[in-house]
Length: 210
Ligand SMILES: C[S@@+](CC[C@H](N)C(=O)[O-])C[C@H]1O[C@@H](n2cnc3c(N)ncnc32)[C@H](O)[C@@H]1O
View (cartoon, protein in one colour):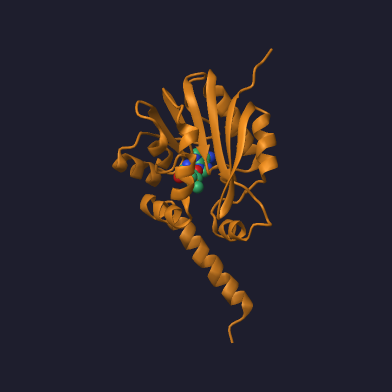
């Protein structure tokens, strides 16, 4: 009879294969569709309605947030995985930028809107902090930061299942996320959206220095 250890090893191998495959653009888009990302994205559209000028999407993947932007925005999609940016190019959704979101190769104070959607759970606390600091640096003084991610909420079963399958190893609670964001920004809005996971959607401004 096969032991419990064998099944655990099999499950871990399958998960590792799934995670590797998820870096391929079309596989990633398919997984997102199954996880309900399309529904969540439609609910997020109003948060992007005021965007204009240069919009930087940190960890933008295949550029799905680009589809939510009003016409006329210059959409810069930054990601550290080339296959996803290749998919973005095929979809002709925006300008790809292969880089690390914790070290953004963009001039300070040159971006009108920064967004970061479903990325913070991929970042350890120190990298998340670095990403927020870089976001504040590249934003224009009157710019806004639109932050979205699913949160860690153990009481929510669908969320627990999705986190167990997710490639991101650092899910954070809504409070942890808000505290980190507030170290760099004034939070104007901090909404909760629920679909399988619970998400937070925040609209933030650069903190005023007196
Ligand atoms: C769950 S996906 C979200 C993609 C996209 N924002 C969306 O909503 O469909 C997370 C993305 O963050 C990217 N990512 C993770 N760590 C990163 C980092 N340090 N710098 C840039 N991108 C990163 C991954 O490559 C992946 O495309």
